[in-house]
Length: 321
Ligand SMILES: Cc1cc2nc3c(=O)[nH]c(=O)nc-3n(C[C@H](O)[C@H](O)[C@H](O)COP(=O)(O)OP(=O)(O)OC[C@H]3O[C@@H](n4cnc5c(N)ncnc54)[C@H](O)[C@@H]3O)c2cc1C
Image (cartoon, rainbow, N blue to C red; front, top):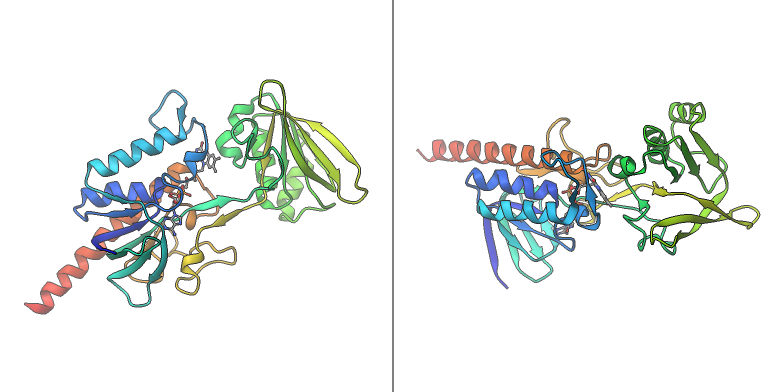
């Protein structure tokens, strides 16, 4: 068991954590990034990325994250193959975290970039066809279904927003919900029901995603939740929109969160309620959830971390003069 100390301890190696690391390293904070169980974060489970600025051609999610990590290491970041299992925040700076390996990580500032995971239905074909017709992000993948027939599965705000967004690309959007009414806000429902490109299928649960001969999604198998009758729906793309779960188990009772478990920050900043603890990316953002916004807030966390340390060091020096 070893102890690793740094000016800047970053938990998470997605776009938020690695962007914080790039800025932190270039500001001389010699960051440590603890990578967690999904090194590179959510983009490593997708294929085509077409909306990350700087690349005219379609790039691959795993490749983008390898490049981000290489850049972070190039400027002086230490990457750790470990997962944080416990952390002491109440004691204040320096913050001490324990890894699954038994190693201890000590950071003058703490940047939390543990992201979120899309919730999936957990039915046959869903994971096998992920990226081949099945997606959990219309903003990310809707563009690939221009002029095609798509379905959105869910009944909350996310599902309705995804369905409305998809009408920018498709004239044939079906919203499938397992109940006979939506949970989403009334104003969103009004927009949905008045949109001629969207139809609804009530009381239907998707029980299987089925591929065609070309290996991409061909149709959905549905079961009526009231009568038990089965049916199929041919679609080119299906968007599972039943919510996201932020990875914040570790911080329960230690940092303020909203009712869905997202970390709360001072509006417009990555500052949590604890001095020296910053949160960035999907772990504090249930609205935008994009690689570019995660990278942006990662940059903000590093800039605020540097200012926090500079101010603290100045005050310490003044006090001891
Ligand atoms: C299938 C799919 C396709 C997508 N396509 C696009 C796209 O085309 N364009 C786009 O902009 N966005 C896309 N997104 C969204 C984008 O991936 C996310 O918004 C972005 O990855 C969020 O970055 P993040 O750094 O906040 O968190 P994440 O990418 O979720 O990374 C979280 C990191 O935290 C680590 N971690 C978690 N817990 C711990 C712990 N206890 N200890 C240590 N580490 C921990 C994980 O291992 C991981 O490295 C897509 C998402 C998915 C799921």
